[in-house]
Image 1 (cartoon, helix red, strand yellow):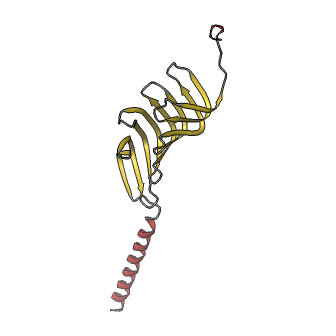
Image 2 (cartoon, one colour):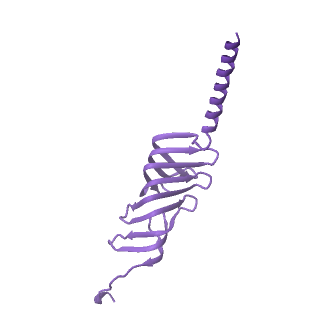
Length: 176
């Protein structure tokens, strides 16, 4: 009988320890995960972006979503017409600020043919602006390649500026 009581207490003690371990292991983990995820971002009910990623992690308390594994986002204007595509390795969405940060090999291609290359690009859905403080390579509709540090634009890449342009360009005599 002594051995049975001891064995019962031993098994009960092990189970309590396992429950404690499981409870601690959830700390810092996402509240939800999805694979081959597609999410739609809106601004006042108007579709502004459809984002696809191989993997999504959602953190409810932080109001934060992390996308990875080939992020591919289509952006739309106020009339829900497609304007721009963004690709990156990772994207983070701050739900409270309605803010997206694309990270790693960011490429943005507008429907007008303008292309932007950078390491990190932020998108403020409320202000409808994209920007970065990093190095950029910007290719215009006329295939001019511009380099610089820092970039600001509307989402369609129509009204843009490079904050610190760098490089050398040649002006032909007939273009003066």
